[in-house]
Length: 429
Ligand code: EZ4
Ligand code: CO
Image (cartoon, rainbow, N blue to C red; front, side, top):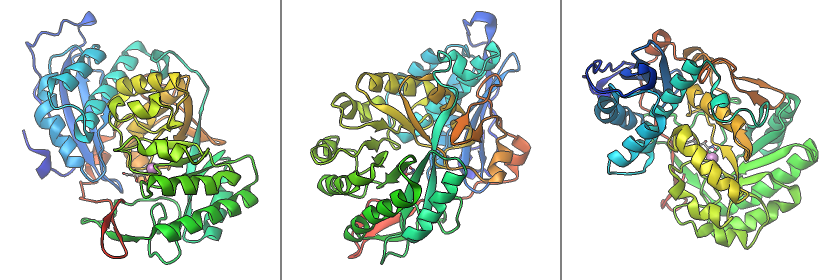
């Protein structure tokens, strides 16, 4: 078997493992699995699992900037353990991969497990002849509210983009604008529609200035509230760049404009950071796009230090584990707000929408829109209408991968930027 490190949009077939005991109801056995890497504008890693009955499922395994590590984890270490297993035993396979690795948690491991989990749910729902949300307890809502990304180099540009989103029917809009004096800022793209930060084969270096940033964001929110009115939800992503006391100050400065949330205000490795923010502001707090397990957010949730948990299907162990996080969060009044940037493939988006639609404590779903090329590689049935996404009604996840088209876009190394303070000190991106 080839190593994915040497591959370009290659598939890595694993031989069928006939003879391994399946113990399956109805004999639905995993016959083969492969990893497909494609770059229709940005890199995506997809796991495809095939069964002895011809039914297959797919799962997203994309970890932005570290894609090949997950591809290798799957191809070299997970796929050999899957062959011959009963494809219906989703929970058991999850536990087998999580506990069986000995080395638990972490983005690479949990993205790989997530891909297997998504693909198995896809298979189970196809076999049942039902869209996945029906297997997750059915619909708690018909559609899920999404937020779009309005960004601009100036406050005026950003507000104009936000007005355009509002005209398209969006009920919620994330606002990010350039910081005066800084050449580039998180969330502000060079072209208007798609923010694609993983843009270089070595990391771009950005400069950061906290004081200038903290001066501009309240002005942006004041201008946006004035232009957009009271109804539309306004969101902002700090991208882990403040200290807790700075975040408390920014949250307080934003309170008059009633933000829906302030996201990733601080680094979250130290969960106590959030206790300090909470002491200073009533601005709702969201965190968790880089979380991988319930253990990364357990204290934040049970101490009610956050309002929205942003863990998502691909990076937090799949549908199986994300449901566990959401059920735990529900007890503590925490709602979900799944990460949905463009580095999460349409496979993840499809899975997230079934999850969002089913749980009682759904909050909001991020939606950035993929490029046309990405949508062609991953044909899907979900659709946007009037500020909401509707999950597919076809059996399974309702998303596929066109392997011929995928093969036209070979893997291209791409990194997220890094960030330094003005004096050269390495900082959080
Ligand atoms: O930086 O998805 O809320 N969204 C974000 C994204 C993340 C990227 C990282 O891969 O913060 O823009
Ligand atoms: Co974010």
